[in-house]
Image (cartoon, rainbow, N blue to C red; front, side, top):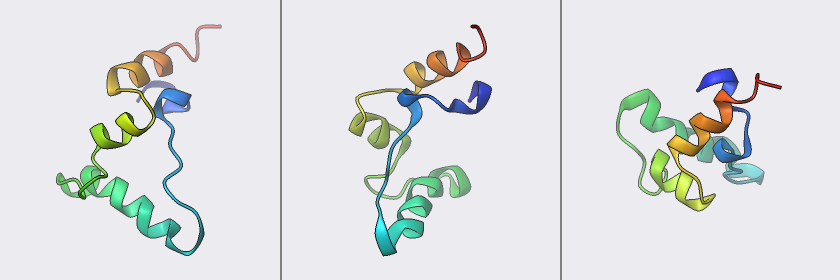
Length: 66
């Protein structure tokens, strides 16, 4: 993700509390192992925030253009 991907189109709060690390691992499993955890694929997560990889890439690419 260009410029770190620190844009709304690429951000999601997965969970809070005791299960926080487990939720993060579920989201990262796709990148680490190539297989998404059910309900935590990149497309699933983008859908939850009404975004897409393309939107996130575009927004992130524009971070350094001010």
